Image (cartoon, rainbow, N blue to C red; front, side):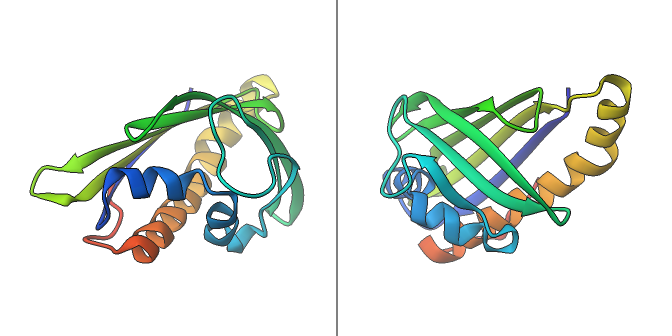
Amino acid sequence: MPRIELTTDVQAVPEAVFDACLDVGTHTESMGTSAERAVGGVTTGRLGAGDVVTWEARHFGLPWRMTVRITEYRRPDGFTDEQMRGPFRHWRHEHRFTPHPADPSATVMRDVIEFTAPMGLVGRLVASLILRPYLRRLITRRNAYLAITLGATSPPHV
């Protein structure tokens, strides 16, 4: 199963980073390159425990739609969203927020994404060779947007 792990330092307290990551509008703004927007479930405001949202976007020039549920919610430590319906056989994205060890007014934001593609062996090859690098870049751009918006201390790193 492909796995992506990213760590980003953000010059904001964990509560602020947690809230920004669950805000539908902030998410939409951070995903501008793929024209992502909420089209079902919670479409405005901040997502909470158990909430469901359907995202629509364009990736590789094609329309994609994915419905996720917030399956874990522990403010301000983290939350997890998991695909209910969509293009992946499996999708789980953990978002973790810890106070920065060198600066109590900053946060270490950590993303752990595990996913599998449909279509057996062909799907595994596509996931490894195309989807994993693409998704890493997409989430890195999203995290850079959040870090800049909330006050960056460093660029995202792996």
